[in-house]
Structures are given as C-alpha cells and as structure tokens.
Length: 291
Image 1 (spheres, one colour):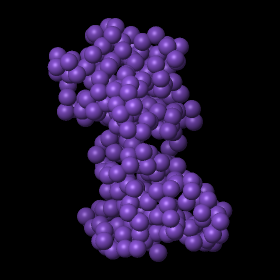
Image 2: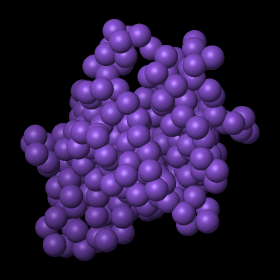
Image 3: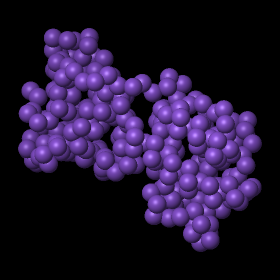
Image 4: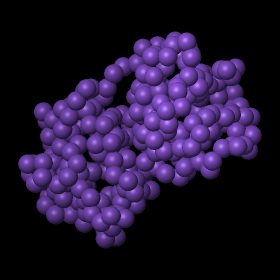
C-alpha cells in the first residue's frame, strides 16, 4: 500500500502488484531478465526516510520498512543500493530524467553494481507495461504531469555505457543532456566545432568514444561508441587518459590544464581542442541539471 509522504511508494506498490499477479512461471521469467536485488533508501521532502528491497533474483518479492534492517529482513543481500530522494525517483520512473544523469549531478548515490543502476529506467518501464496489462492486480502510481519525451533517435545508456568504466556514464550524460535540449546542443556545437575521440584506459584496456561536436550533429550521432575511424569520422584531437581521471575532470576535481601538465591527459592532434574539453563537460553537466 502507498505510504503517506512518499509518492515513490506507489511505484514500488505497482511493482509488488505485478509480481503478485504473475503466475509462478511468468514471475520466474521476469526474475531471469533482471537477476538482481535492488535496495532503495528514499528520502522525502520532510527529510523522512523509508527503505525498500526488491528481490528480482530469487523469490521475486518486495519488502519495506522504516529502517534498512527492517526492509532487508528475509531478503537476499542487495546487488545494488540506491539512495535517492522521493521526487527524483518519481521523475526517473516517468522518464523525465535518468539514473545516470542524477548520479552525475549527485542526487543519486549508488553502492554496488553500477551497471544495474543504468538498468533502473528500463526495469521500471517494463513493470509499468506489465501493470497496464494487469490493471486489477497492479495499481498505477498517482497521475502526474506529462513528461517530455527524449528524442527517439538519441543513443541510450546501454548503447554508450561500458561496465567498469565510470567515465562512460559521463559520456552517456553528455549524449542524453544534449540529445534532449536542441537549443543547448546547437549552442555547444557552434562554440566547439570539433570532433573529439576519447580513449579511456580502464579494467578492460582502452575503450573509445567519439564526441561529434560539429554544427549539424543531431541527437543520434552526437556521441558514438568506438573510434573516429570506426565511425567514419575525422577527429580533430584524440584524448587519452585513465577512466578515473576523466571522471575527476568531469566532476571538477581535476582541470584540463593540470591534467595535461601532470601527464594525466595525453593528446594527438590539435592541443588547443584538448583544452576545450573541460568547458564542454561543464556545459553538458549544466544541461543535465535542467532536465
């Protein structure tokens, strides 16, 4: 049953209703699609917290409580723990924002398997669709203002993100922020007018992405996984750095100039373009905050 003061509890209630209404075989199928246990710490506007554990790994059940221990009783160990405010949880479920974008802005805290955080939106979307097919068993969340749709051609988190590379979340953030804001995108493209190849050195070696920041780029090709050559583009500069250093650069803990001077940022091509990256990251982060 929805909990007073927590709009997000209606979302959890909907998910619970679906799991309860499904046959044993169908419930097992849904569990096999996810194979994870999610723990949520939700804070409302009054500062009060409530905890939920969603087991989509073993039994397919949902528990909640006023304390973390109460919610976790009888449940498997969570694969991911998400601390989030009530309003943001609702916005994610409605498609008004993304877990990755809110994580980068600091509104969502994640412990555990980061990639499961990126699966939160499709998970909620899937159960919402199931709820519509089982209206009697799965109550829908309270009506909310209609959400603005992201461009259909925009790259998804799954297209861009790579497990073990936190920097890929930053790059996905750029794609989603600029893909959702035509005016912001055109402004950044005009001021940047360059194509970047970003090579991040992480647990699986070097992974590459292209930032196509030339006028005329649209939501579908502003960020491209792979090298410039693989995407039939010519990069004005190739930037090479550790995944963790790229995250620090995006968060402001590291400046482009200090990274370059300290040997953390290497480049091939137009060095002046390399110094533009920091301003691009700042502009994209500002766009995410407005989503």
